[in-house]
Picture 1 (cartoon, rainbow, N blue to C red):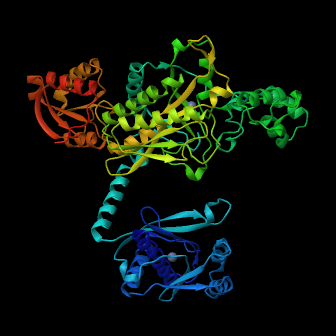
Picture 2 (picture 1 turned 30 degrees about the vertical axis):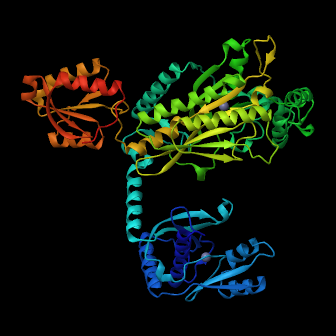
Picture 3 (picture 1 turned 135 degrees about the vertical axis):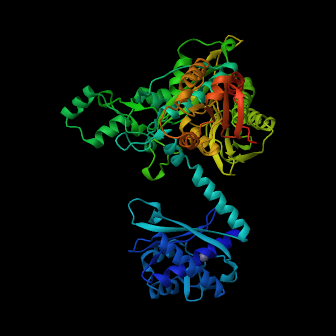
Length: 633
Ligand SMILES: [Zn+2]
Ligand SMILES: [Zn+2]
């Protein structure tokens, strides 16, 4: 363990010591350090409250002040079991003891009256824990398995100094204020409704503006780079995904296939069981198997999946990926080397089955729209195309003020032979990814063994304004799908050649990316993204006519504006615009009406005073056109 992990893990032991003093019936499970702190999972009939947390923390403080040494004790497996039983902790600890492989040392760490099965290591005295805090209580299944009992997990954190702890708590506070689930609700950006389904995002009008503006922006850049826009349906036949290999291999993360009424009626009539139906859906014909195996040159589809034709059942899959649809567009006409690269882009919606415990606001969902594209190119073009993908990412992230990002380049594991494709081509593609990453001028790490079996890839990780990292999407080189779909183009030599495919969804999905952006901006979107850009606020109803004429001019200029005609006081109107985080509020009184001016209040700069309306309109239009970031004073 690193010294920080040692400190935090010692925090777990001190937490457990305090819990047993206050709740002697508690059954302990485990208490490891985490990236940002520590936790302990306990089984306790009493449901812990925020007040309990305060008491536990006070008790921990006492234990730290008692300056107890941490003492390591190695024991035999039998002695270990005896110690656990004598302390009444057999419910979980015996299982944890059984996890320790034969031949490995078994040790306990003791501080004061408390003793815990633990490999270590620990700080020397409890008094080392000076800067710590208990943060929250959450439910956690024993061994992370929903079939097991749900335990109570107490989270805490610890730092070497009080200053570092204070900074961390400040960041947590910031993160809470920026939480996209909270802001999404307050600003009415999106809704999740249980009647529609968990993990399925309903974009409200305000949220849809943000998404549409982002899509417009990305599409503009894609057009400049020679991409062509396509649209494809949300479902595809199961046989399509059997060809691609997405089914049944990734079945666990997909929605169950759809079977249309006629086939369903037929198999019900035959008295087919559910298990048989699943097997028939998974099955392929002998011809299909030999064709795929011929293309891939190996036993990609095994014999046991073959069934006679009359027992095959084809259904539809909610698409887990857009690639097969785009491949069919590529393959729909003969292609020559002069046509390449073909770049097909789609904001394509896909569906994946995520466990309910994994779902989280917009960032972990079951249906999402990827900023997807597939490039079909020659071997020689891979480098330039990867480079193009990265330059797009750079433009978009820079425009959004997310200049702090890094990339990870996933390469082959040099000691493995699981990879598809010619090693010489791999070398070239890896070199292309590496040099593309280099030219970005941002930190990048090479990660051997992180490539997929079908090609190397590049991932993007951005750091937001409060220092948190978010994994976005990828650029992925693929030698496999062109083989499985038997794609070809005619080369300069008049012979058929295999194209290389590049999958790229650099921002991941619109859902995830918007979730990240909500937190990044804390809801204060740049004016080009803001759902409402300008709020007109009259001082009294005498300014109504003036206000309405300005509203008409703003709308004619394409701005998203509204006029607050509520009957409440000016202060209340201004406050409402602030809560709604409208970038510009224009206050209008008789003086402004007379001089065709407005009093400008901006989110970024506060009260800016009076300005001619025409000048304001110019400035607004420019900011929108150049997609300016909020300019803080
Ligand atoms: Zn320990
Ligand atoms: Zn793809």
